[in-house]
Length: 65
Image 1: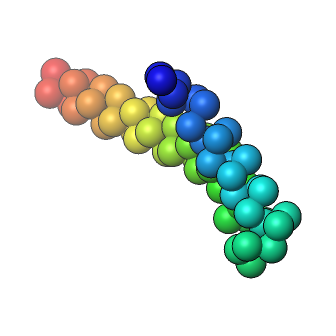
Image 2 (image 1 turned 135 degrees about the vertical axis):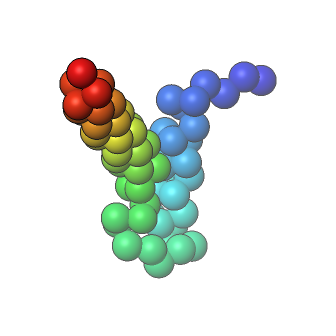
């Protein structure tokens, strides 16, 4: 069975939600929903690092001339 990368956070969220509602775990709702927002935050961080790298490389290119 193939689990797509986008489906894994949703599966984890559903598992955590069921465990929380059945009172098996006493986690904060932030941790229960974390599979949904952690991936988004990682994408944002990678995008910001890419932009910073592009600006630094561009500045170095113009400084050499």
